[in-house]
Image (tube, rainbow over all chains, first blue to last red; front, side, top):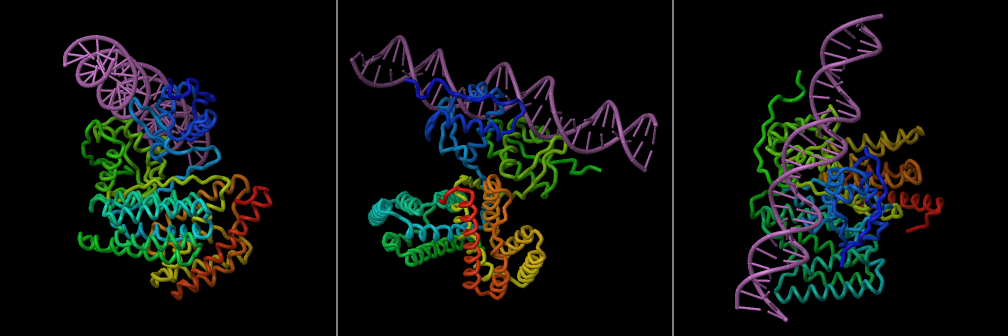
Length: 244
Length: 244
DNA sequence: CTTCCACATAATGTCCGACATAATCAAGTA
DNA sequence: TACTTGATTATGTCGGACATTATGTGGAAG
């Protein structure tokens, strides 16, 4: 059984075309063939032949997507969609330089975004999202009290909040900033364990969001972030990194 | 007169190395040779020879930097640094998908970042930044009252605020989000003229920031953004885009 | 019949060499 | 001096070859 459709429709492309043109054509082809996240793209050589350009050009374009996290590539396994693409979306590569010395600065950027997220979540979330938030929060607290690794549950809880706020951009930005934070954090300090002290506050915050109490939810999120910030300062002082 | 130093020091690189390794090595070489923004990098072929890898690999790495806006490339003119790089900085490509239908969502993300910026600016700015803010604001108001194009002055004023807040990440993020916003805004609606109604509020806001009145400054920025949001809604309604 | 190992296969990863293209520089002429 | 023309040099593009590595498959051993 072939994993992907044997035929893949392409529109021809002129020889002298920019990488952007290639990505646009690929985007249209993906829409046309209704590829979903996780689906496989044709081999590079077939894409090249289909578009009428060289494999190098296809590779350049795909590398660009790979850097953006839109596709994953593996030998033999091929290239797979890791995120949705759509022709009426603009890929804006916001490259932020996160300096290793400025963990606090990175945290500072996340702060207003997280707070606004819970504000919006408290204001906008519907019954479905309320149930999800409550469930994720209960899960987080259970894992935390059991003494297990609470970070995956924490991640899912915050993802639920970001979902509930009704604007996917918040989740996208926060998660990518967080990812960058972890990268520069783990290098000198090992795996991230920040936020331990703030877990007990997550229950009341979930309650406030579900109850639609915007100010209370925002205030609790502020407290949570303040605790995290305190832990960052501690760790940096212990490691003799000085503060910033 | 040679525009760049005739010798360029490299450290050798193993053959099977990731694109990331190449960029790291290049970063160190750039630091070592003290290249600044606007300076020229050696030709790709020299970089390849210096690092002991193929030109294709160098090109892939440079393309990645080009997509991130770190370098610009021109035939014959060569590759030039467009932004600073440093070995203790992590380039985090935050790719946000800005959909054409969601101008309001984009604005919603900018909102908390702008408000936090003026909060921090009001709290942290020193005498130098105060003078700059006052000057830029006066300039903006003068241009506005003269009936000229106030957008460049507006941009400079906001840049001064972002400078004054003490955390360069805010400015970077906001400006790139704004750039993406303009891209998707200008396509259907022509050049951006948003914020006209909010200009008179900029004077009091600058005063509040300079006076260190955090809450007043934040409140005025909120009003400004609310006016902008109103204009976005108007334009979208007129153009029959519906609201989101 | 099932399990496990070795080989064939197919896709990306890497490299090389060649040519195209364009911008800059230099020389030469009006 | 000013303009034009050609040479130079760098990136842009392409095709092909080989390396590397999951995946799949078939045969031998149990």
